[in-house]
Every structure is written in C-alpha cells, then in structure tokens.
Length: 461
Image 1 (tube, rainbow, N blue to C red):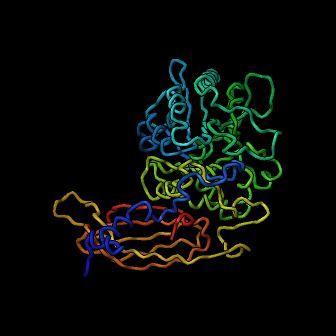
Image 2 (cartoon, rainbow, N blue to C red; image 1 turned 180 degrees about the horizontal axis):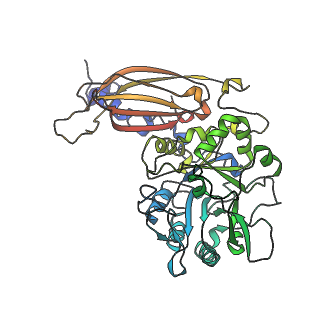
Image 3 (cartoon, rainbow, N blue to C red; image 1 turned 30 degrees about the horizontal axis):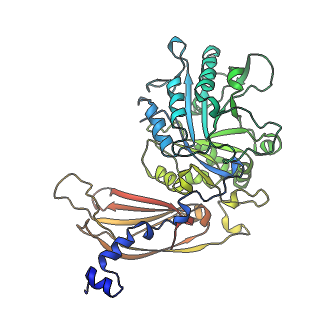
C-alpha cells in the first residue's frame, strides 16, 4: 500500500491518509447537513404545526415508584432543550404545595423551588415558549398558594391571556418567544365565583383504568378561579374527532396514554392526523412503565402529535430518537412538522403512505467503511471488542428496517467493514436513521458501544 507523507502530499496537491481521516471526522465531513444545524425553519406558523420536545414526570430522577424527585431533573431537561415539562402538585405541610408522584414513595420537593428553577432555566437553551403541564391535586387553599407562586416567581414570563374567541389558531413559537404557558384544568363557565368544579381526569386515573371502578361517576374537583385564570392551554376530555372538529377551541388540549393514542392511530389514522393539524395533543407513557422506560415516539410523531412526553432520565433507544429529531433547527425544542401533517385539505395515513398523491419513495445507500478507537465495554483488561455496525430506519410502518455488517474479531482500534447497505425510504419526511455500534457476543446479548441518530432529511450525501 503506497502512503504519501504529509510533505509529499502537500507538494503534489494531494491528501495523505491522515489528512483524509481528519477530513472525514471533521465538521465538514459530517453526515449532518450544516445548513440544518442552526435555526432554519419557519417559526411563524401556529403552535399545532410543530413537534415540541416534551418530558414526562419531569421531577423524577429514576423510577416512578420510589425514586428521588429533584429540581436537578428540571435543570437537566431544560438544558437539553425540553419545551414542555410536567409538574404534579399535591398538598404539603405548613400550607406549602409539594411536587411528587402521588400515592408512591417518590420523595417530595417544594413547588416554589420547582417554579424558581423553571424561571431560572426556562430559556437557557432555547428562547421559544415553554409549556408547563400541571396536574393539580391540591385543596383550594393550596391552589391559591400555587397561583401566587406562578404569578410572583414567573412574573412577565407568564402568559395568561387565552385565545378564546380571538383567533381560530394558536399563536406561533416566534410570537411566544420567552413566554411560559401553563396547561391545566380551567373552570367551564367564566363566572365571578372564586371556585368552580372541573372533572378530575388525569394520568393517575389512567394508571388504574384496568382496576374495577369504585363508582360509576367521574369524580369532581374544586378549582380555584385564581389558578384557573392562569391557564393558557385548557386540559379537556377527548370525546371524538368529530366533536373536536366542530366544537374545540384552539387552546384546548387532550392528553392520551400511549395505548389510547396507539388505538386511535390504528382505528382512525387520517382523522387523528387531521385533528393534530388544529389541536395540540399530548401523549404520555403507560402507568405500567414503573421503571421509567419509554414507548417509541415515532409512532406518535407519525400522527402529528406535538407533545410526545418521554422519561428523559432513561437513556435508551427511544430517547436517542427524541434527541436525534430535536438536534436540528438550533436545538430549539421546536421542529416544524412535515407539510403532509399540516395540510388540512390533504389527508395522510401513515399506515398507507403509498396511497397518497404525493408519495415519493427514495433509495438510501450507506457504505460502512471503518471505525477508530472504539472503547472497551467490559472492565477486564484483556477484553477487546468484536464490533459490528447496525443501521436502523424508523418512520412509517413501511419504512421500519434494519441491516447490519459482519462483526470484526478483536479489533476496536481500527476495524474495517467496507460493507454497503441499501434501504427504500417510502416517507422520507418522517424517517429517522440510527447508527448503532455493538460488541458482538455469540453467547449472550451484544453489548452497546455507541449510537448516532439523525433525521433522514438532514443527511448530506
């Protein structure tokens, strides 16, 4: 093999092997199109036209049953560009509302500390609006304390005027820059009474949905008008897509457990997509995920669901996909949905993308060449990795695919694969490509070495 030295290569206007390697691993040689790394999307469309990076039970550091609650969890999520955090409020001692996972052994933190943390970190990573999703289980007295804290601590950042009767659509991320929007229950009739009744529907009820009902009636909760008036987004029970189409106001939002969202996507895919061109939809993990595992967010993004809440503390494939989607557009936490999910006059069904009049599949070729200095994954000194590379495609069901290279024996320093892989991408706008490197083990499960996830549309050849 003839290798040019640096001096000889420079004299002959050629590139040395080291120079080529430096180029391939530099920002200029990145697979990520540099034009899409900074803010490049139109941020002046209605809020419902964007995917919004969203966290579930944001206060938790570990599991959902006995793990610690901490303001540090909010700091970590907000610094990662998260634009929708969750706050579960319960009665605390000495008249101080607390935040924790109700009816569990998770530790409690003061609501005022949570709000102060949100105020300090809300716009460190992104200037675009932050949605605070509130589950309120407090008495009227402590709701009044909640309202006072939100007003006093958040100050001018808090946006309280709703869009009822003003517009047919929510404002844009650009129009809501550096604003904090509260989402929660609102009193139905705008009376002057200091309290009113709302239906007590939340995730806690969803967790117990398989348990026998104690009575046939939905429980009611008294809500303080002072707190109700601070809610920009109104939490509402979902009746039907038809009811939503004819009656829903733009600031009304329904929440779905992952199983319910999946049910609607299977039974009424196009209707779900159409619903999400107008209304914000929030999806959250099943109550059975007590270990803080996550569902695949891609299934919900395919439907145009904007607020797909995940457990940010769980570093698994699902969070890799979330991080991959939101790495683009300046890591702003807002990604403009593809046009196929925003146009009300053009119905899109993720289950049958080839039936759409704008169906345009593409061929995707990947050549996996080599790796450099892959880390050991076992603690034993003599252990050397046997690396392989797997390329995974996530998107509409027709696009789900994975292929992998052969593994290389005992070489983590400079393994060479030189293998070509090919995929057909049926809906490029919704596809994510995940590259995974693993240590092959014939006797047990492969060990994870590393991964990289990128939206297909952000790949530069």
